[in-house]
Amino acid sequence: MNAVSFGLALAAIVLGAVGQVLLKAGTNVVGRFAFTLDNALPVGLQVLQEPRILGGAGCYALSLIFWVMALSRADLSVAYPMVSLGFALNALLAWWLLGETLGAQRIAGIAVIMVGVWLVARS
Image (cartoon, rainbow, N blue to C red; front, side):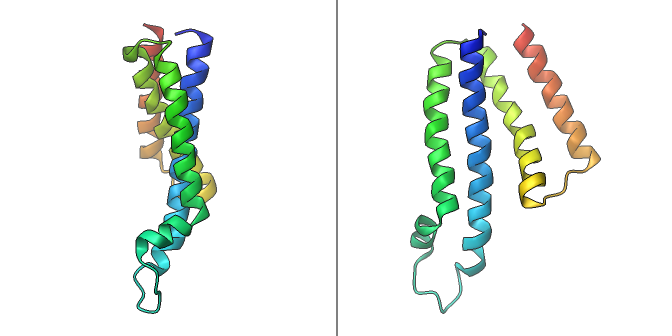
């Protein structure tokens, strides 16, 4: 995998992870009032009005574009395992931005994933 395809894949992975965090942050807001009787808007419209959810969807759209560009330049068998890096990035972003826990077992699992991605990328 050359530097350009690696950069494109990495951009897609980062955008996907940021999209996940934005979606979660948005659902934290929408989920609190989605099913109350005093809310006249259907849940679908509430979701469409939440800027974090819209931002997450936008990140996914950009991620798709970068991913397709990466796949046009790299072998799928090398590029696809890199998606696993998103697990590590998601865990770190959720810990940092959303206050989620990041225990020793989760960190160990992420480390195993990272070693696996490194081994595949070297092949």
